[in-house]
Image 1: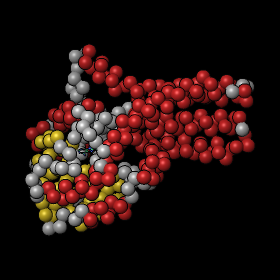
Image 2: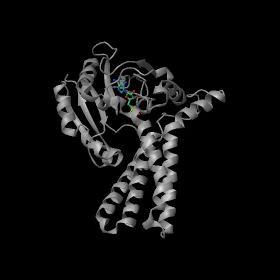
Image 3: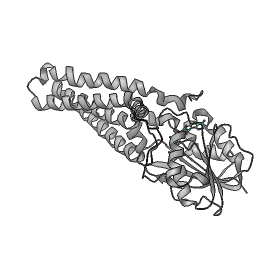
Length: 327
Ligand SMILES: C[S@@+](CC[C@H](N)C(=O)[O-])C[C@H]1O[C@@H](n2cnc3c(N)ncnc32)[C@H](O)[C@@H]1O
């Protein structure tokens, strides 16, 4: 199900590259670095490097072959990838393994630098701080991928109890479930292309299973569609949510916003949750976070797409913007 996505959407397909780099770094930390002459008599440092190398190696291996081994196991045990009895949002193991691996590799390099070139201690210190930052990123990603983590901020989104809500870019349903729990009587339409390679099998099977477990099957309609060309009539929905999805559209974010505006009824609100440059995103992806669109960019984009700004705030280390289609 891998359709032609934009570069931004496909960035996660480089997961294999990170894994291979991780394997090389892990092997180096285990096999080569502890044998460096200046480290010969530092037994504790050598042990630490062996341990770091082993963890990096295992995390990279898990990223590389984890998902396919899991599917292989399910196929041979007669199971179905989605037929679990607990919520599963199918996140690729690389999402957590990447910041952990980066932290350990940087720590390893800092330790080696300190051991071999003590005069370079400022650089070793900088690398240690960066490693600690990546480790914090690892902890953040771990909590965001948990099934019991709140997926949406508390904002005034609905117009009434019987609203029809759009979940634009629903993935395996983390946000759909949150909406369904609050909106007790309304209906939700969950739309996605279901081709993200960082979600197990694109997420559609998992979404169906998660909805079944939550008792929401009758109130959620699943649609396969592109956020840039939503498959709905004008002015269909009372409100919409797009969490961590519109920011995956690269240069087409504006088109995505205009599409949501088109399908919203006048007065309908859209809640966007996005990653913006800041400490949290720096902890997760480091320098890459500087290339994310900032809050001002999102506000401008919303205004230029025809929305009025209602509210904004920080949420779980990310950021949300609540906007409204003018009445
Ligand atoms: C990070 S996931 C977020 C899923 C869910 N909203 C959540 O917060 O857990 C991003 C989702 O956006 C979807 N997506 C990205 N670009 C899309 C597009 N052009 N059309 C439809 N869905 C898209 C991906 O398939 C993926 O499921």
